[in-house]
Length: 198
Image 1 (cartoon, rainbow, N blue to C red):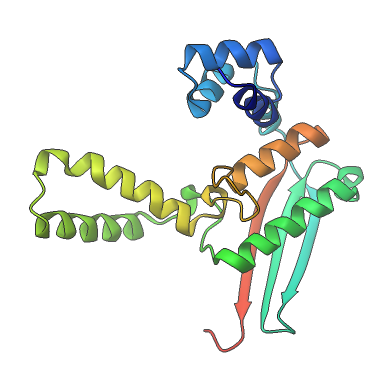
Image 2: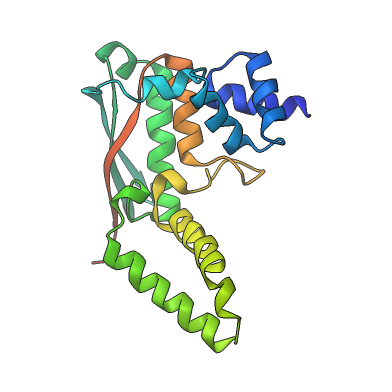
């Protein structure tokens, strides 16, 4: 078991080192399953924070390329005190830059309309039929493709642009910030404008 995995799990959940070690052991070094294990045991600090109300925060504007591209994003936290900290402001700026760079459509997967998902699944089915893949494996393949689709269109599911390893999502970034500041943080909404686009 690598120390790097333990550190990553600790950053994401806020759980103790030994708890993280045990969670990784129980989940065969799968960080997502380890997070779930910690939640079930009531040890994930960051998860407890997500149930708290957020009414403060910041609306941040980011302009790129001499006014060619702009982003407005609202990120909420629990107190005005945290909203004014440098850590929170840096996080919000990073989120705005992510939106500018990757053009997400939704904040989270819960916002994706069922009709959009169904249309996407129909496209995948047509592709699988064209490739003559056995129908019994379609569901598993489609499930994987939908996860990748979420990673393209949902901000929380996108890989953080500054993560050179290509593993940390925006949700991981926000969770790490929750652990650091000790408050719940939620990306509420955003708008992205590019000159000439409708």
